[in-house]
Length: 113
Image (cartoon, rainbow, N blue to C red; front, side):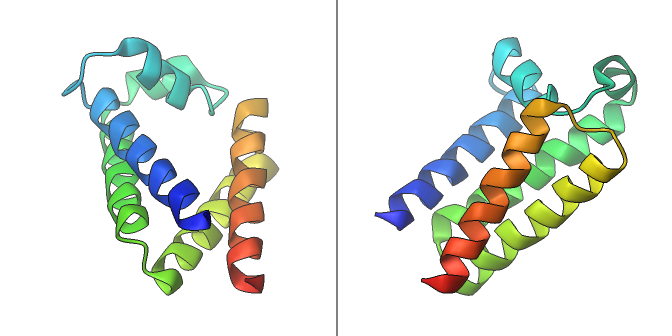
């Protein structure tokens, strides 16, 4: 059951990464994913950050679809630490905080499982 959740999250990450790169032209999805960050206008100004964030999403999605236990657990752990660091630096919105909690929950659950 958990592997379905992780793989679905991986497909969603790849889909969002492709939308951010404008390979799939759904501006709503890319804006929704970039809405995790407070300073949305500044992020749009720095196109290189957006591209690297999209590449990171695609790589994370591929790892999640592959579903190697140790890699997926470490991906969720690193993701939660990075999101939490952004929370401490006041650069994540409430939506980003929810993503951080989701990543922490999945990482903890995978470690305890």
